[in-house]
Image 1: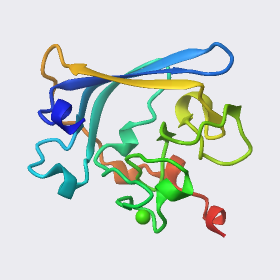
Image 2: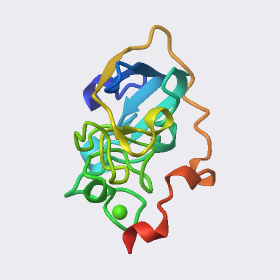
Image 3: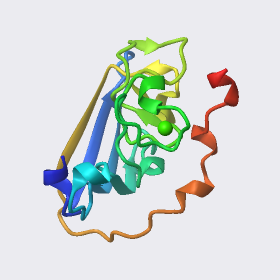
Image 4: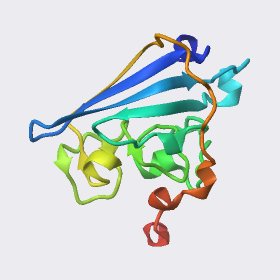
Length: 165
Ligand SMILES: [Ca+2]
């Protein structure tokens, strides 16, 4: 992915389906992994996204700037490992508004946020039937700016403290 998008002139479209024949998409006019990174492995494959449009709502902008966390490589901002806790691998912050590499739990589930989640569409307890991330070069370069100060709006993804009890 880095070699596809490291230049910063790519866009991302995520197509999703649920188990009730619903479909939705999220498009990001700017998408990059390891943007302008000389050593993406050392730098943690940081995500850059901006310029959202689509029917699924945005569940990825709050992940922009985060490195990629796996169960054996904790690069998130949680005191825990979000990948281990939510059974996925993602650009977790503390921890997520989306978890597309989560467990395939087939629709509604009692557990919290550990399925294939896109919270702005189906919440944190609904595991999607499918999701596809498609990348292509931008038709025209888009401004790289405008990533908001994400630290100031963490509330929806901050974990209830009880979840770690
Ligand atoms: Ca952590």
